[in-house]
Image (cartoon, rainbow, N blue to C red; front, side, top):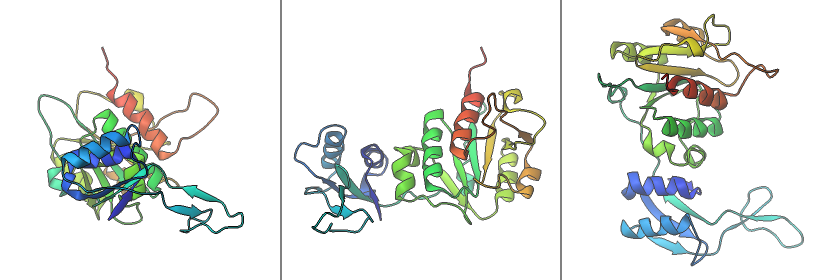
Length: 250
């Protein structure tokens, strides 16, 4: 079970998977928005709602702050106990449509839950159709990821795979072109054709894309800096690339 504390993430779970939400706890009879909406939606779906004092934690994150000057902090206006979102089989991720072009993401061993949560949020914002996650040496879709995603982890389907090279091959078999991000690439993200399905592949926070991943991509592209800062973290780079790939050309 996950203990979620972002009301937007909890509301998204109630909308997408109400049976997965086991309990909503708020720390006031009138918590205000957006918690009022969470409580209303929980009650409409028969999810128990409990009103109680917030749990106290000391500065080390331990329960029950001690007297005598030890710092305590409130854990927020509420929380919810929720079953984690489940991955789907890889073959169900490729919902291509001949009438429109689509965009997918693949993450090559992204390890920071904050980055993964931010990428899920970006995917929900930019209309990404699905995310491929690597199983090993990668962040799992945990409570931090769900909270940071602000609902993205509920709305964007994802698959967890053991072999990214094989997943890339499956995408290509489904008429999806694969674009790897690489700072050493000759072409830039700005030059990528927009009139086709793309799966954008983003690499690990420290080492980027693995060699085999790069070799399987149809195209590699860089995101060149316009100022003195030479690079971005993976979530910020994802935001920039998705904005460029989804920008209207008219």
